[in-house]
Each structure stands twice: as structure tokens, then as C-alpha cells.
Image (cartoon, rainbow, N blue to C red; front, side, top):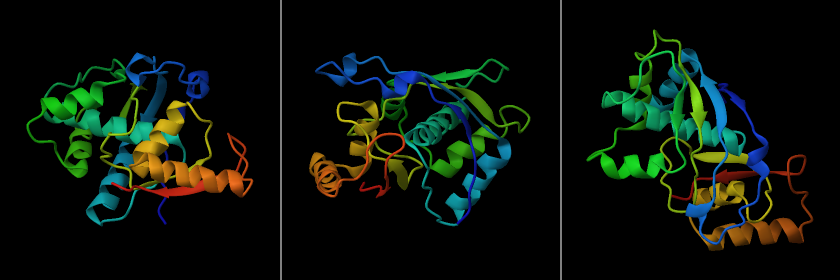
Length: 194
């Protein structure tokens, strides 16, 4: 097992419940991150060798998926290469997936980031909302705790499990087994069902 690290700053908005009927009306929280060039190189190496990428924590998933999209922008010369911090909006990933005729592989997208800032890596912030229907580009699984219903964290887990039935089955088991929920609760290992 190879471990790599990203820096991220979790905001209180992570735990804010979704209180609207349509997720498109929910304002997603912003989280700052940085991923060093060596970490990007380690991830590319894992991709080349077919090693699964399994982040620990939903915020780590959001960071990894965000850097894929920044890599796509870099490949198409649409990424700002100044020292200004980068930003990925709540629905940008969905719009970009439709805007490009052909999306690059994860390896190609991440490789494009290595030349953008003298191999320093990448930093910025993300508001990406990963909900059912999202196609994961980097993450093959997830280690996370059990989340509260009506949260964006639960939406991300639902997207990874690829069906409401899988999500309901997992959480029914957790409740019946009296697993502890939330940040200091029990952990789960979820494989990408897509």
C-alpha cells in the first residue's frame, strides 16, 4: 500500500445539511487544497501501474476529482498559469464533461498539471458537488465514516455506490449493526460501483 498526501482545509459547510428539494439549489461549501508535484507524480505512477486510488475522507475525494478537472483545463490551455489560486465551481465538472468532445485519461490530465507552475504542484479551492450521476475520474474507492442523511457527504457516497439501493442497503446494515455515525464514528470501505 502506497500512501500519498494532499493538504486540505475542511470548512464548517461540509457538515451543513441539504435543506432544498433540488440539489441544484443547494449552495456548496468551498474548501482550499494544495497537492504537491511529488504527490501528483506518485498518483500518476499508481495509475500507470493499475493500482487503485482509495482516498481517506470525502474531502480527499473532492480534491482528487477536482485536480482531474484542473488537468483537463490545463490540457486545453484554459487553466490560468499565474500564481493566482485556482477555483472549481460547484457544477463545473459536469459542464466540462459536456464541453469537451473527448475527455483525457486521468494520467493525461494529471500530467498536464506538472508543467503549469514549475513543478510546484497545484493549489486552489473547490466547491465541486459530487452527487449521484457523477462519473469518477480518479477514485476507485473510499474510506470514510457513516454520514448523516440529507448531506452532500451522503450524496458523494451515493454517487460512489452508483445506486440508491446500494446506499440504502449499506446504511440499513450500519444502523442494524449499531455502527457509530459522523466524524468520530465507525469507518467504512467503499468500492466504486461504476
